[in-house]
Structures are given as structure tokens and as C-alpha cells.
Length: 253
Picture (spheres, rainbow, N blue to C red):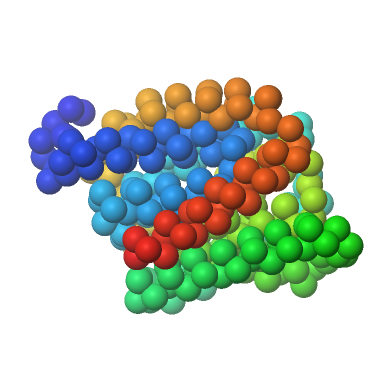
């Protein structure tokens, strides 16, 4: 497995970036959400945008499995079923139309949309008078965008997390519901990455095995951090990291 370091054209600095990204992915799957946009960009910078979608997919699923096992009791299936059909539809649209999208324009557009959503939520939070958008239309919009964004650029996290924040879901329910949402969606995406886009192969899985220890360490750190973060802090952390990730994507695209 160590041959992967010499058989690829990735520098040691590149590997350090990838390992750091895998660690942050573990932290996110452990419960400290908001790193998604940053992680996606870090992995893409090292391995290239298309290849990175296949490399990150098995790592996402491993993280999802741990998150589902640990946070399962907190999952809220009523909210899950509101999002899931629309996410699946968005994934299918992404499979057939996302492959030919201009990558830079797509990522910058997503970054602006994410950042605008965070700013809007911040203003609404300060007003403290807005009605929580717990309806099917809002779920359909956020679910569809999440599904399309996750297939094309593994960017479902920011949109689905903003949905859970908007309906003011408590942190344990947030993490447990998101764990199942991402697990089911990523399993649904897996065959398309293997047989349609062909981004998952023996070489990409070998890279995943190198990055796996950092992911597992990040999971442990994420679970530990969730235990000490209060609900109000959790909400602000997610919003801050999501906005930071959007800015990161915009300027690195």
C-alpha cells in the first residue's frame, strides 16, 4: 500500500493536505458539521476535481457508518423522508447533466448560494421573529439542490445542514438525522461513481486506505467535541464553518 506514495505524482505537501482533509472529514462525521465545502476543495486540489469525487466517496461512507451507529437513536425520520426523495431526484439530475457542467462556474455559483443562505439565516436569527420554514416546498428545494450538488461536487453538506439549522433542530437530532441522510444518499450514489463516471477503482481505493487512519482519528475528535459544545455554540459554529467553506470554494475555484 505504501507504493501509492511513489506511484502517484502527488508531493508530500499534497499528501499532507489530503490527510488533513480526511481528518476534518472525520471530525465532521463525528458531529462538528460545516467542514464539507473546505474538505471537498482540499481533496480536489490534491487529486483533481473529477478524481477526488471518487476518492472521497468511500471515506464518506465509512464515516457515515460510524455516525449512524453512534447517533442512530437521535435520528428524526419524519424530516429525513421530507428531504430524501428530492435528494435522490437531484442526484439523478447530477448524474446525467452534471458531468458536462463548467466546473469553475458551478463551484462559484454554489459558493455564492451557500454564502447568501448563511447571511440570510444570520439576519433572521437576529430578528428572532421569523416563522420556521418547516414545509414541503422548502424541503423540496433544499433536498433537490443538495442532491444535485452532492453528485457533481460532494457539496450536499452545506445545503442540508442549513435546512436542519433553519428548522432549529437540536444538535443531537441534527447529527443523527444527517448521518442517516448522508449514508443513504452516498450508498445511492456509489454505483454511479463505479460504473457511470468510473471515478472509483482499485487505485482510488488504495488512496482511501492511506487516508483512512486520519478519518478514524477525526471521528473520535468530532464525537468528543460534540459532548462539550452547547446548542447555541453548535449553531454558530456550523454557520461560521459553512460560510468559511463557501468563501474557500469561491476563491479556490
